[in-house]
Length: 236
Image 1: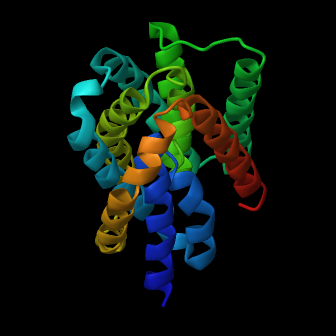
Image 2 (image 1 turned 30 degrees about the horizontal axis):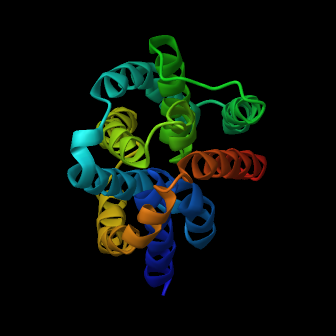
């Protein structure tokens, strides 16, 4: 029953991510942690990475590959910091910092300070994403905010490419720290069919958001992700 409920949670998150470009982890992370803490972060990172590849295959022509490269450059040191948080350091302070940084970015966007995917911004966003994505499995909001004014297909494809490679980086860093084992990988693999189902169900919602609703969806999900991470940190 735990696996079934976990699968349904992942499927719901996969619908959101398939339509917006991110959101699987922010929907699934807190609920999976309640069902079984072993699902976070490694199994969730595995299933989110596979879902990202689904996104990329569907719309790869729209990806901003330059932006992906710079964001991944920032993610490498961020992933190292995130793994250190998991292994040694107080998680609450780092998670709270990342969440507050995302909320500040959302607030800035709402007062019309438009964030752009410039090289410095991508490096910083990639680093923040590396920390939160490796430590908690929630890494989408920092990078997604930079693409809030782009067409929906660009957001989804770019984040798909970023998450696909970023997942490998995060798992590699966690594995180097001895925090990945066969059980974690199996737990993630069992959830992949649910993620695939959610991805297929996302098509109708994707078409609706592409009619001018991408920016509100990105801002809303980024804020929700930051709040989720902040609340999660207080109970960790």
